[in-house]
Length: 271
Image 1 (cartoon, helix red, strand yellow):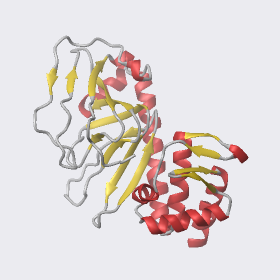
Image 2 (image 1 turned 120 degrees about the vertical axis):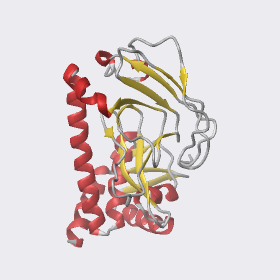
Image 3 (image 1 turned 90 degrees about the vertical axis):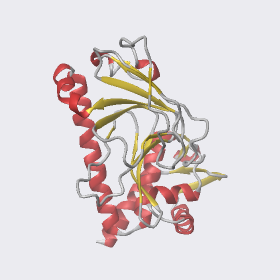
């Protein structure tokens, strides 16, 4: 899997009624669909500079939301895009991250169904902005910020989803800030492996959880703002503690309980 790949990807946007936005799954676009299609302006590019796919948007006058289908490694939004919208992940998994000034990247979150994403607002122009891309085929509900208040008033389920999703994101970002202050790469690696196990895990021998998404050491490094050499060394340390087991090329199994215990201990030691 190459996170940077954009080739051969397509995305389709279908409008759904406010009452039906939360039906779940790829078949959730059950609201009225307009007969006519409006193409996005040609020539739009993704953050990587690669031309965006020819995405068409189908909207209903009665609808205030839309559902976007993304293929693996396709961007939901990049720097300079996605403002004034709220995104709710409905299926799959979306990686939300920032590219650091030195070229490294760091996860802001691995978001599954029910999680909420927004592009940051930076009035002072000091931020590099963020990127959201699908780790696997995913669907995301998109709500225009100007329509959000009215939709929440009309749709209690949406209000509950947004409040719950925002609360989870706030907690995750507070935890990330604490991890960065701890300056311990193993803490970020351990918690990222736990997140991957939750999103892509299946039971494995010895009570472990196999991560079904192939990830290289470099990709793990990209997720936590580190480098491949450091990640390889930290994985070997975790393996010695029985928290990680190699299953072959780009495949690992983990013990989430031991990973969290390791992360808590490392955080306490650094404090």
